[in-house]
Length: 406
Image 1 (cartoon, rainbow, N blue to C red):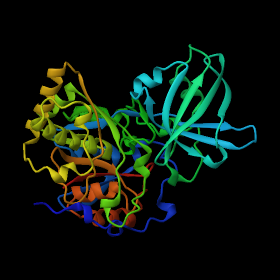
Image 2 (image 1 turned 90 degrees about the vertical axis):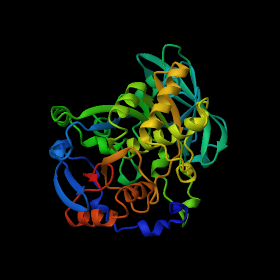
Image 3 (image 1 turned 60 degrees about the vertical axis):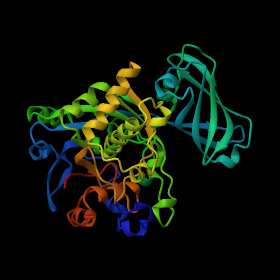
Image 4 (image 1 turned 45 degrees about the vertical axis):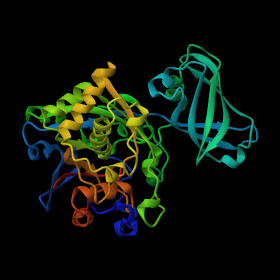
């Protein structure tokens, strides 16, 4: 029986992070960031462009190709009050791609800024999109936890919801940057390979990659594959409970193509993950395979990975077998991609199944992402963070990077 991570005290994952160590803006050239290397317990440093030199030839590297959406919408009431509506996830229709294609109406789960000033009634904003003058209307529906159902409607069938966000939305940069979004963030807060719209936060480990680094990886004989996990605002949700048992992980939507599953099988179920979002998706695949081993006819909803599931099921099927179960499920259902969701929490006590190395930035104190890193480096996270603090590394989303190879 493995140790139960539910009783981990988050206070043991604290470290001093002075504000000046938080990178407020990225470096002018993405791939010139510092790279901390952690190999078999030893810590050293280099520049990000050197990353390919540290990776074994023939490895499989997996990226999250999600694209950050301009999810913040601002409305001004007739009273002058400014209301911010922050789109978190689509409700009607609940498929991201379909929702973005909607004309005239779409519903989202939203966080609302200055909520007390929006008791009832509609919010309206006039705008011009693709040359069409339109009026966007927002109506607040039921409350769901800290979020609200919001119905958006507009009066032109030529304009999609994606068009409206593109013109009218603002990119949501992380709250800890303590600054307004700038025009430059539209480019610098997206990875160079972002494709699939849906995130409200960037998978920031990917921000260091440039076309020349990607080319160098391929020249080294490293296979590059992509998957999609749409990052929710919950990624910034602080752990408020003393023990992590009291912290509810947010649900995030994942999509993995059949070809990527096959590539993983070809690589014996081993991968190098770029970013904690890729880590969470890859590790969730294993537990989805475990569900399918027990219930081959499970529905898409039943494949959802619950927060504590990895600690409750002890069926030790090999990763390749788990991946083959997913392939079988896709074949039986005539699907080209696996679409489901995950709430997985990776914390010390977790046994990694697929991820053998990871590229990741430096995370906030007392965060679930720090727990994920600690689980990967067998509790040795402090040595890594002490080194980074002592050697002038820049922290958080726009900060420097690390390559972890336990």
